[in-house]
Structure formats: C-alpha cells, structure tokens
Length: 172
Length: 153
Image 1: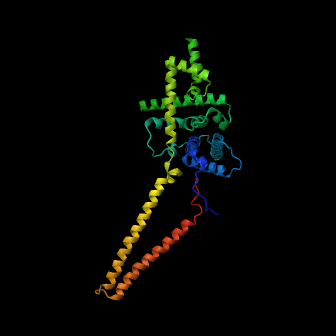
Image 2: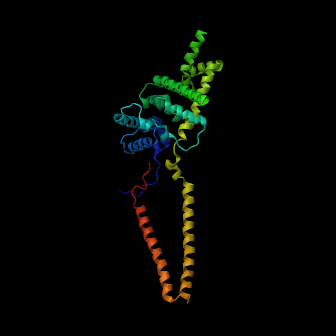
Image 3: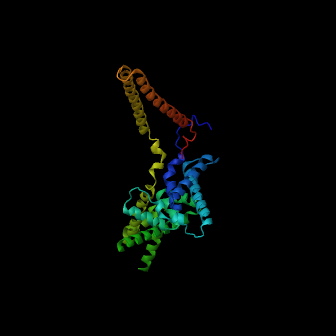
C-alpha cells in the first residue's frame, strides 16, 4: 500500500484515548485486554462509513463502541470460564502500574474494582470522562432518570467500599 | 424528626445529580439550601465530592504514558533530536576524516613496518568500514520501506 504523502495527522478520536482506556480498563480489569479493545475501537472509527458529524455525538459513539467491545470480550471469556468471576480479569495485579499514587487514590481504585461492572462503568463514564447524564443515557441505552439513580447508588456503594477499606487498614 | 429524615432521604437521592449540576435550577437551589442547613447531608456531599476528585486522578493517571503517541509527536523534542543528530553526524565525519587521514599518512610514511604491511592494515580498516556501511544501508532501506512505520494507534 502506498503511504507516501500521509502526514502525521493526529486522529480526532485520539483525544478520548485516555478516557476510553480508563473505561475499558475498569470494565475488563485488565490492561492488555483494554488496549486491544481500544485498538479495535479506533479501527472501527477509521473504517466506519457513517460517523456522527458533531463532536459530542462522536464521543458518545466512540464510548459506545468501546463499551460494546468490552462486553464482547467479557462474554467471550465467560463462554470458556464457567465461573462468572473471571480469573484472568479479576487479578488486580495486571491493573497495577508503577505510576505513583497517593494512598487515597490507591484505595479509590481498589474500591472501584470491588464494585460490579454496571457500577464501575457508570462511575468511570461520569467522573473520569465527564459525560453528561444525557450522554451516559445514550451510551448505556438507559433513560436519564435511571442514569441518575444508578449513578447515585454506584457512588454510595463506592463510598461504602472506601469506608470498608479504611476500616480494614485501621484494624490490620 | 420523621419528616426531617424523609426530607434528607429525598435530598440524598438527588445529591449526586446536584453535585453534577444536572438538576433543574429550582431543584438545585432547594438542595443547596438543604445541604447548607443539614450537617449530615453536607458531610455526605463533601465525601462524594472528595471521592470524585480522587477518582479522576486515580483512574486517569494510571494510563501508561509510554503508549501515548502525542509525546512522540512533540514538535520541540523532534527538532532537538534532528539538530542533535545532525551535529553528531557532522562531528563524526569531521573527526573520522581527520583521524583516518592522519592514520593513512602515518602508516604509509612509517618506514619501520614496511610498505605492504601498512597497506594491509589500511585495507583491514577500510574493509571493516565498508561492512559497516553495507549493514547500515540495508537497515536504512528496511526502515524506509517499512509500510507499517506510519501506522498510528
């Protein structure tokens, strides 16, 4: 294939790379699998014939693609692993990395990983990627009232996990 | 007291949406007033806010910076790298040229080791240099024609 004349154009969807990776990582709990999902999402963004025109809609589209990719991966791995708790992805080791985090941030991340996937994805979409409730509703295909209550319950659950972690720390 | 708890429960249900600024102005105002007045609800609101700010940094900064293409495309860094390489190559050529010229002259003029041995030593080094050049050329061609070089993502 002829590649001359191709400049280093930064693809507009790359601005959502970090956020998308955060979403995929928190859904899959595995860095490598998350990067694979991101890769195929970018692939789709390059190949797709009909993409939304305006940027907010493109963002929603992109997160939807990532989420569906993650769901596919989870479904696929569940086909071979009888347990609903998937060994590969539940190992938190693959999620750790050398970046320095404060103790509080480590706890927040651990607490997040203890939530169920529904709660994780909605929290990451809102608090990390800063989607509005209407956009989250589109990505998750819910109505915005459900988004509101589910997000609130997820945050309360996260807070409970944080308190539990802090209590563990004190008792040990 | 019971009605107070009811009010608190109602408010707390909407607290997330209040913090996200997703309520109507009227409701936003109502919850603002309640949170100001009720220490319990304010504590919860503060907790949630702190959690939210921690969350973003905790999950986002976990992204491995090495796989971010934008660092590679940082313009000043690329320019520095270009200038650095150019200077390095110029210096190597200059020093190498002078040294090899001196070397050749020394060897040919040195009567102690004999003319043929001198030519042999020079041929040895020239041969090494040519081998290096051939490998370098192969590598450069491989690099130039690598069709996956510009693939991003």
